[in-house]
Figure 1: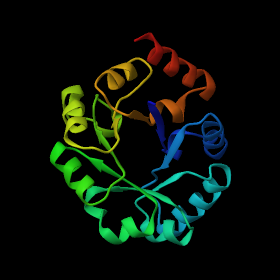
Figure 2 (figure 1 turned 180 degrees about the horizontal axis):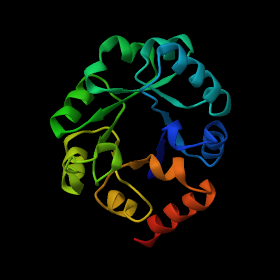
Figure 3 (figure 1 turned 60 degrees about the horizontal axis):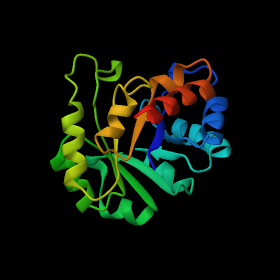
Length: 193
């Protein structure tokens, strides 16, 4: 089944906690990626989000996630190690090459996010890696691969066509007026192909 993941950016979203709760209730997986916070501030935000989205995947703050009893974490490759794998049930890793994907899998990652696939404001000025890159990453590992970067309802079917296990979306979920309608648009475009 093709999985849709929301990667957060609270600064794009005035109704952040309520929106995460609505996304969770709609069956969307959420990665709480708020890298600009201190450890204590992230821990406070994570505690609040875990109350409305118990299966949220925390991001980068390993000690805070462990203190909160989180079962899932997502990391940059440089932070992945055996002790992380033994602390959490699920560990995801961000990768930017098929070699990194293979390294993440070898270190015990349960899934990888590969990107950025399309042009995105998050990586302004950086050339996207494209769909061929995504397909190559998918062929190089035996764990789920999720495309990330510039994905929208308009192009999400291309991610699925290239064999990815799912797609990560940030801006669309954080800025849309109605999460349910936005999700309907995604699903409609996924079913067209």
